[in-house]
Amino acid sequence: MRRFLLKLLYLILPLVALSYPLDYLISNALKEDHGMHGEYEVWNAIYENKIDGDIAIYGSSRAWVQINPEILETYLGKKTYNFGVDGHNFRIQYLRHLEYIKHNKKPRHIIVSVDAFTLQKREDLYNQEQFLPYMLWNKNMAVYTSGYKGFSKADYYIPFIRYAGRTATIKKANTYLLHPEDTSENFRQKGFRSFDLQWDASVDSLLASEKKYRIKFHPDTRTLLERFIQECQNDGITVTFVYAPEYIAGQQYVENREEAMEIYREIAQKYSLVFLDYSQNELSFKKEFFYNASHLNKEGAHLFTQQLAQDLKKVTF
Image 1 (cartoon, helix red, strand yellow):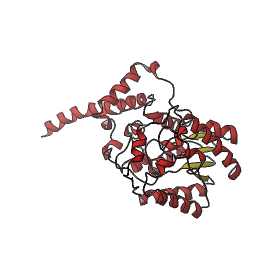
Image 2 (image 1 turned 45 degrees about the vertical axis):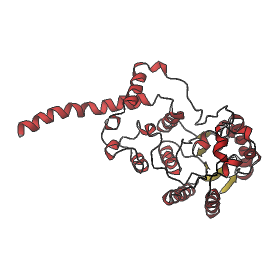
Image 3 (image 1 turned 135 degrees about the vertical axis):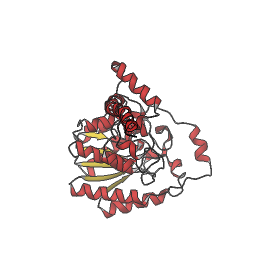
Image 4 (image 1 turned 180 degrees about the horizontal axis):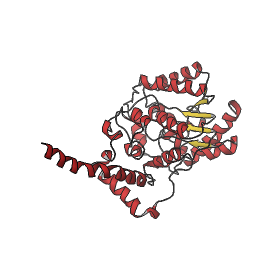
């Protein structure tokens, strides 16, 4: 038995010794990837302490596609960065907030782009690959990403194990290791990227359907949002809610949308927040400024951010 255990130990020790260096190499190579709509770029900026901003923008794709930091900087004279994270509700947005203020100077103002799905928690960990390079021994990552169908507990604590079976991911990392000069330009600029697209006609048939979508509100996420506001107010950070333009026909697709709006109004009133609601703004009635029901195109985002900057200057700055 003793001989067997020794042989097993001799077999395992080299694997353990190699696991962390391999983990380190793959993780650092993945950080060079500009795919997944630029999520790695934002995480890199956070962990490399590169953000020295006065204004931070939080939200989903409706934040990073529609609110241009450079326009806000021009109008308000404040350094701005967009932390919008694709496809996730406030839970993952809050994770990004925690890591941001942990590794960088705190902002003076946070704009939270709320929408119909801010308080709805999805089951799967969408775009889970974005967390791979940063999650090892990261407590915040473990707390806020473990409540989804995605990673196992071991993935957060044992080097390299989370890459097991991810052949495509390892191949991608290997490409960057062998050809570091092939890295492309950033997908986002200061966390923002607009799209010069026309309206997707396939959306019309969906909007014409009598079938409606009903939001399933996640009570814990609402509690988290309110906790976040309290933390910000204790730290002297001003929070502003913004509901970006949304194509008017698309608003009717969500059956209980008004319930979500009422929650945001209630929270804003409770904590004395400014809530700028553009869902009835003239942009929301003009299809030519959208590429789908939820997202403004490049021209629409430009016009909206200009309007937002002017309004922020009046009520906040």
